[in-house]
Structure formats: structure tokens, C-alpha cells
Image (cartoon, rainbow, N blue to C red; front, side):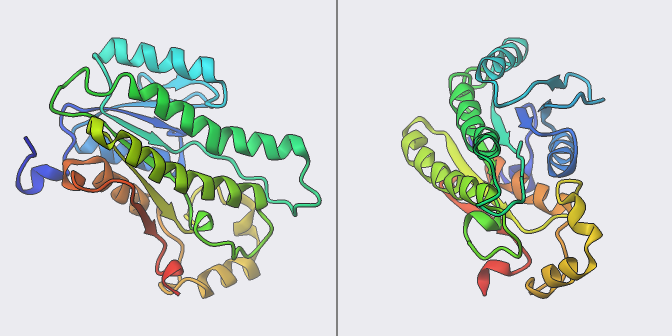
Amino acid sequence: MVPSGLARFRLDGQVCVITGGGQGIGRACADLFEEAGATVVIVDREASDRPGALAIDVSDASAVERAFDAIAARHGGLDVLVNNAGVSIRKPSDELSLDEWNRVVAVNLTAAFVCARTALRHFGRRDAGVRGAVVNTASIMGLSGGGLYPNISYQTTKGGLVNMTRALAVEWAPRGIRVNAVAPTWTRTGFIGQLETQPDLMARIRAVTPLQRLAEPEEVAAAMLFLASPAASMVTGHVLAVDGGFLAQ
């Protein structure tokens, strides 16, 4: 039964796994999901100070399977997966090595597929009334090739993640599992790193964004909460832009 009123935006009692949850958007998402009543387990390459967090490389499929199986065994199953782990190597295509390309593909695309497929076998076991939800972190660059600097592997993998979101949504809909994505603009986190040391580039980013600013991680997390919650019970296969109007141009 779908909750009514503002309760539709809560995740009371649900078990949520967030990859790349140690910082930035993932950390904001973990904080908000916990505030909404969820039990949150962070999976991140770096060790986290959050209780129960697991330090693994999501590009290691065997490690992902062991971790998810352990989480599900401890909590009786899973309800929500947020595929947020990601990497960017900002180089022109003729300077990007094949090893660098493969690393970005492994983390941004293959790992998201492995995590989703592994979570699938644990969805619905803990609570027959909650079948499961996946929220992928895509990007405006997965829907637009017009970057302000070369970032071919990131743009390609995020475009792939957009279509993987749609494909899984259609395939898994008969099982009652929803699959959606957010597509953030440049967001004020450590992920954009060195970009903030380039005033001219930051000015251009603001200039191409109708709201004329970067997103805050909490703003992206709010969209993730909506897509994960019962409030979005009829939403699947959707990519929700959190972009200050960038894609509307």
C-alpha cells in the first residue's frame, strides 16, 4: 500500500545502499535518506566514518557481490540502490590512454550494471510490499555532448548509463522494480576538484547555466530521495535533470 500525504516522501524502515557515498553527492544523499527514515549502508572505495560503511572498489564485481550479500543477510534484504560511484579523467580523446578509458567505463558504467544486477536478487525479500528502486547518478553530459572541456570517457559512460536506466526500467517493471536516474549539472563537491581553481572556466559554467550557479549536493540528493520514495511510485525509466535549466536551452 502506498503511503499517503507527506509520508510518501519517507523511507521509513527501508534498507538503502549508496555507492560512492563517502563524500559529495553520495554523502548528502546518505544524510537525507537517513533523515527520511532509511537504514543506509555506504559502499565507497575510501574508508568512511559512517557506521556500517564498507570500503570496496565497485569495479571489482566479486567484491560487490560479497558486500551486497552481506548487507542483505544482515538486514534481511535491500529496498533501494543508489548507483553514485563515479570517476572522471578530463583529457582530449587523442591523449586519453586505453587504460584510462577502461577505468572510467569500469566504474561509471559496468560497476553500475553489476551493482544493479546484484541488488536485484535481494529486492523484495525484506518487505513484500516494497519491491525495489534504483537511482543512478548520470549527468547533463550524458544528455548533451556540449562540454566546456574534453571529457570523452565521462560523457560516453554517462550517456550509456542514461540508456541503461531506461532499458532496466522496462525489463524490471513487471517485477515491480523502478529504475530512474538524476542528471546533475556541475555540483559544488570535491568531484569537480581542479575546475574551481580556474576562474574563467567557472564563469563560463555559470554563464551557460540559466540559474547562473552551481548545484549544491543537497539539491541533487533531494531529487534522489523523490525518485527512491513512494512519492515516485509511478515513475520509472525517467532521467531527472538537476541542472539549473542547462538542458532546457
